[in-house]
Image (tube, chains in turn green, yellow):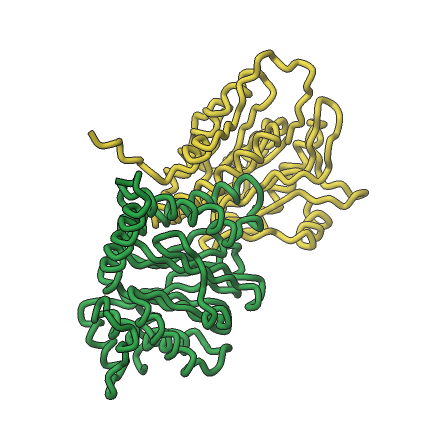
Length: 263
Length: 255
């Protein structure tokens, strides 16, 4: 079938639709800057979604757990080989994505007789100072651009649908306030932003993206609390104040619960 | 049939898949190479954990290669590899180990057990067999870590691992060091395991000085160049270095 170009294009389009259907209701991820570094937050049922890749690089994804796992291990392998062969300072997120992960994803996506990766990721690299932090969003087809709005901000979001991402970004921009916020403040803002994204992602894929409006009386805190009856908040930081060369730290339940007590 | 599921978590396997080789098999015995050797290192269990020390001299035959060699290599936040033997190979092993532990922890989402870490080093020594047999890359390390209590493991050049009860020493000056430590542990004022950090530091400095007095490949404290041995402690809080200022004071009053 792929001898005929138009059928290949059709196959790719079908594939896209299939993957986006699978991803649509996934739990969103918020990446938010705070005084000492970057915070990653999501709400998950069982499997972990936020991981350490290297000393200064973190990874969070939504999608099929097995595909998340494959991408995570590929990133860890590449980063550690580079760190071993050269130096810790040579492990750079942009190179990892541009030359490693992205081409692999694109190849898998375009080989229409093999299964594609059902995964959507955000990766962050902590710089020596906030201006040098790097954020990369990586999609199932290997594309890794951030939108123009996203590029202006030191934060970002990933959700199953575009309208959900849009609503989250808008919420973040409106409530951004102080970029020197404490970790607790960042946790609260990120958790509310997650609820905004989930509210819209829950509706799944929609015909008309403009329809994706939050209900007038929408209360992100109440929505979050509903979800937390069966799920838990998962969060990790890349913390510039850590003295060890590894800056990643998974936040423990107690720490998260204490911060989210009064949302 | 399904492909075998990879066991995962082993960094050396990943490296090898990318063409890495720790110890290349040489075609002929490299008789013309006089490899550099790092000399005396020791580890002593004391009250709060393990004290690890090493002199700073590296030699090639009777030539002093370097007077500021670092023979204590931090592998993770609570493990130190003290090396005697050929630094070229030892540093490489330390590098593989450091990345192996990090890689395991990140890919498998749990820390490697102490037994697993000890075994990793043993496997590296075995990998190094070709260089060991040809006499150009022998490494005889001491691995010290803290896992509920201080622990010290020493190895032979082929990779056999042994756990020390009280102390370990390796390198050309180790015979003198072991004699001193054995004597003190058995008939000294108190056993080594009861000593405070300062007391055990004094013992370590004296032991290195004793080794330097009979072994030309070991340097004691060199007043002219002001180079001190490396001394580090591993306790339940992690690794800390005994500062040169403190060592200088102890040298003046105790050694």
